[in-house]
Image (cartoon, helix red, strand yellow):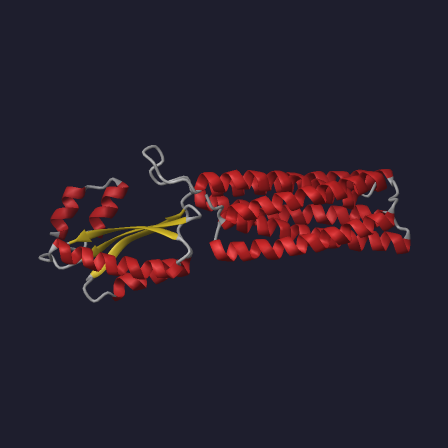
Length: 310
């Protein structure tokens, strides 16, 4: 069975993270550099997160069944929240280690090997980010987007570590290493917020973005045989976009005609994001019953409303 681009991307990123972990861990422990050690811890988490993402994508790609009738796409959102939480925890630990070094006033050794190791790490991470961004663009996959964002923060943190090592090398001010490590910790926590926010939004069935919803509404309203529409609702699980709406048609229209109109509308909506799967559920109304539907939603007196609207 052919491996999907997103699964291949997680295998590549986990392999790269493992290699970088080994390089940074040896140098970080030997040199006593907080910044390098912080970067090694981040690579360790990268490795575990990428492995977890592989299995999350594998499960999310499974077909719907009798138990999970809408599929398992939200596993991607769960993975994103977990990834963001792990990133946050790593940031807090890096801040702790940096503060400890500032307090103990310990020195950084093996500066030249550390600089070489971080330069290699920076180059490899740059190439990985370019690869992950291309896969994210190709697949529009939330997990790969989160992974790409994660490694982008690594790119900046690796650059910051490299700068700190150069500064320590030329100035002999060893506190610079701890201060840069502190800054990396704060930056990592900040970067995790967007990943967690996106994942939670999907888990809470947040609507598609405003422009997408507006475009869907425009497609429905511009169809010449649709009188009006209401109750347009949208959500996504990261892979599949779900859309449902009520459209008002001529009361005496044949069911065959109504389905033709629905198919035309659905085909146009799907063109808005061709890389996504779509589940579109139209409801045919012979008149505008929005008030009745709202009453049902809020538990109001439906019989009274029906008399008023009839």
